[in-house]
Length: 423
Image 1 (cartoon, one colour):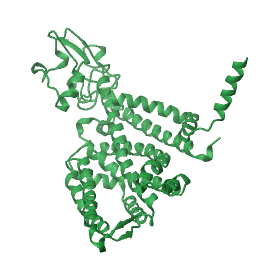
Image 2: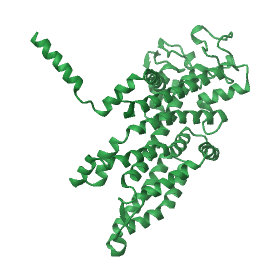
Image 3: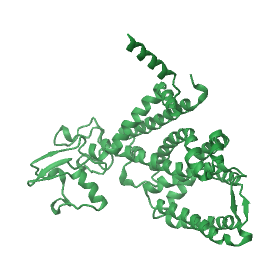
Image 4: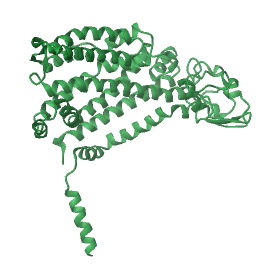
């Protein structure tokens, strides 16, 4: 009896113990069943996207051929990265026609680029198909070229998630930087030497120039070049500070500058800008990711700016100032981590918007290489053959469901993070 009383007392104490903020957010989010189930479905789709090559492929997962055991799907990754090479007999092999000792195939024996000439064009899922056995049936039909629609849907999931997550990752980094600097330093907290101010102003057009030069070859190289120009400008400004006049500190109204810059970016129509860029450069999925990321960061910047305007006046930030910590350390280690909660809401909605933009571009035939067979490209093919209903229903439903799920997650996060809803 004594032990039972102690256990009950411990349970009561644990219930009354204060929870961390993120534990509270998690508890509130789990109460929203629509958002919770949406998250589960998104995680399931993410697994499909990650393991798309192991679910749908025209190569076996593992096989024994001429006495040797091969793992073709794994080896394909090594060949693409240049680490491995195919056996001479397997370089241009027709994997379906090889005489295996034994083989284990993927659940869907087609890849999104596999062309089945016998079942082209536009063979429906319920129509008679020219196949060797039921295993080779095109469960969702074929498109104009004879690509398996099920395989295109599976690999299209990877493209959709890749575009959404990578583009919003770029937007997250840019938005956090500009929003944090604007919100934390405001118009009266950032003081730089005249040399650094002048050189940063001169470096901006130069950084934009080099960004444009490298943008066509690599979005990441363009971003690195843009940042490198400002780093070099600040290092040069530090060196020139031995001159008394330009060494003098001056106040920089950084919040005003960044806020006006955000307003300029927001005023530009996103779709027109994206269409203009992808129409000029060769089709590239990485180009689409970069362009979407470069135009979708403003919402994140506004969220983090608003939060840091509140956080910078809190007691723990003032205590960090009193202890003599550098401002950048206070910003990175204390202020930003406690202001990220609303940003995740913007990211969730942003991923949904990025998937819609990618589907729109694919539908119009801009930016995305045609061989990828994305959801939007399947919808485009349905315009050429209105009777091919499966090319409109399946990818259209996938886009609708995925975007809706991310929006429901965003709404769930909004409700969970809002302290006014705390019970």
